[in-house]
Image (cartoon, rainbow, N blue to C red; front, top):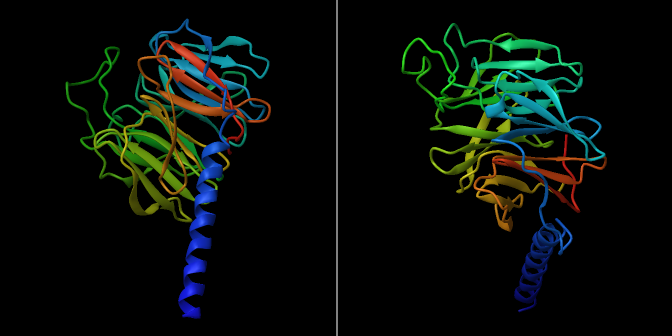
Length: 301
């Protein structure tokens, strides 16, 4: 009888601890009165937000072929005209902005002064479908997705893509050719990783977020469905919560439990990242607009 009572008490205690952990992840995200704050509505379609080491945020207005900067003091300015129709972006450890420049289906590296270096032109002679989003690991290796979304500004040899599959690639630091890390995806889009060597990829073709373990050489294993949801871009906070952009912003904790949803007054929320001096500003790109929210959590690098 004593044994049964002890087992029951232990079970209740463990359940209570897990509940408290999930509850703390849920309630600690933002101030209860916080709402998305409109910064500006002067764009055509915003994408690719990325924060530099100082917390300044860079994002694209892809139809207008520009990269904008929103600094830590709230000032908006154009960082680059003729940006290669950049889409997803991320900063490497040296302060270079790496972009998915899908005007010519390339991967670019832009230094702090705006000088461009083309990192990738093709995959073994075949033109990429259109690099869409990327994430850079602590070794400066680059994971990027390559779905096919036909653009009216493309000039291709034929009506069909040269690469049949829509692939997740990894470009190790210093290499000139990426490796395929997952070719079994329908339409990969957003990608983000964690400090504990996990990678998340949104497959918009099946409406699922996949989770992987990152091996020492950058390859991926142990793929599993993390959640079933539709997402464009994604980001992660220091509590392990995963933020999905799409129909507003939806937040899942590290166990895959939905804990929050934020409505964004826009047709489509394309992407998001943490920035600001304390990395506690959630910056949201949403069609013709950009928004910010002050959070009680921070982003990770």
